Length: 167
Ligand code: HEM
Image 1 (cartoon, rainbow, N blue to C red):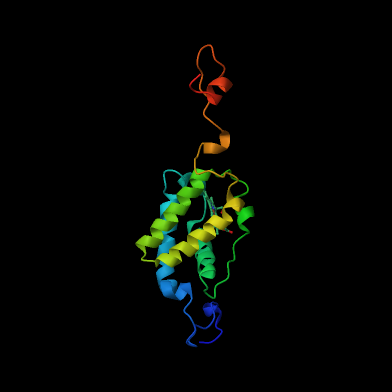
Image 2: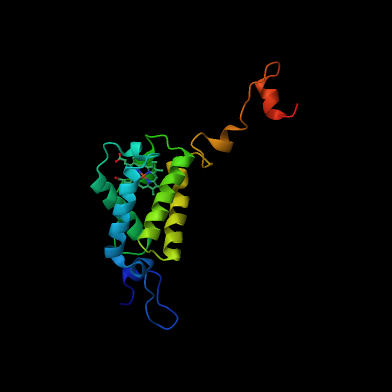
């Protein structure tokens, strides 16, 4: 199957076309249920499920499938909106981003995805992070981004206490 779009990694050293990550995963019969599982977990999740209230779950699963399949080398086109535009209207915390990432990882592991395929998809998620959330940390409260916790101690200003907790 030379130069097939699904074999975008090019021919292997022995002249045989290398299987795409999509093929090694098991193709559509393997990826579809993984994405269904991932989306089901996401929309029901106690931490991030509320974001998906009113969202068409079937359509979301289709778009997520397209994105992952294309990334893994399948002859599939992502037909969704640009990732920045999709998420621009909702503030997403770093911890929520990491929660989605973990739900994806767990669904891939449950679905028997090879380690390198899991790594490819998670690396893709990490590259897209700046388009989804501006938060650098993984906390839902802003974490290190908001600086040290301010404590109120009678007789001392909060700023002093934060700078020198031992003072
Ligand atoms: C790199 C990380 C992410 C990727 C690759 C991603 C990918 C996608 C894709 C492909 C869609 C469908 C777009 C469409 O229908 O045109 C979507 C929609 C959505 N995503 Fe994400 N997403 C990410 C992170 C997140 C996070 C962290 C949250 C919230 C915790 C989130 C919440 C949503 C919601 C609520 C929708 C539906 C928007 C709507 O239909 O109005 N996403 N995402």
